[in-house]
Length: 159
Image 1 (cartoon, rainbow, N blue to C red):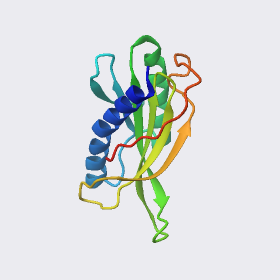
Image 2 (spheres, helix red, strand yellow; image 1 turned 90 degrees about the horizontal axis):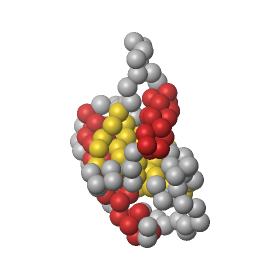
Image 3 (cartoon, one colour; image 1 turned 45 degrees about the horizontal axis):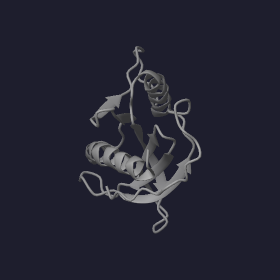
């Protein structure tokens, strides 16, 4: 698949999942990690982690559970891309204070993986998130279904 198609599909997925995360962070100080995936027909579906235990799991455990579930389902379903979102605290370069950021891990089935950190500066208000950091990675969810050897590209979506 041409890299522009991978980029377009991941940016589309990003534009669908980040506004929901922004609304959650505007309302609450934290949110449980959640994800979304792009089906073979191009539909974006949001998904959360569910567990049978009575005690609530820590965010890191929910994040790991979501990754495990996505990895298992990606083997049998024809997903084109996935996104997993969680809240992390980052130190602002300008003020030196900690604040919330939305961490978004994106993966495309053709081998591209990237993690973005989006600054969410105002509590109680839905805002446009500002990308503050990007890290190109290796596929984790689609590691057994991807084609190798593609050059990385940068996402251009403004969310």
